[in-house]
Length: 166
Image (cartoon, rainbow, N blue to C red; front, side):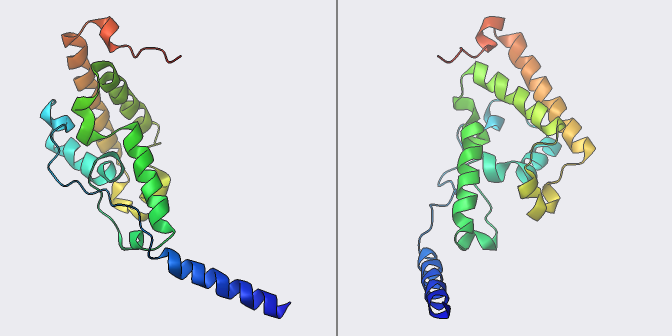
């Protein structure tokens, strides 16, 4: 029995060492974001700072990686979070979205920020500076609402509705 446990321990250690050499590609943009939200909408400095500290690591094309992102399986876990975050919303690709999607994503930003669902608790556990204050949440929500109002004023109402998926 002891021999089997020792063998299992050695196999697990070898696997742990081997996976350290397998890393996902980093989320670091090679070029400046041409389709960033700020290219289309004015982003106040305070809101931009909030987006940088609490959103961009998972919702842009450039992530600031902590030291533990070089340790497996942590790198895979972080990579999945980043891919999922960018799939839902990517501020660096925002202007490529159709107007209805932009309108909807801004609404989702307001809801998730107000409800405390974003940034994720698993992110703020390590990144304590990403915990949003009440005033930061209010500023972000107010800005999103102002951008939505500007979109609403510029486009017909039926163009702001996402088509139903079949």
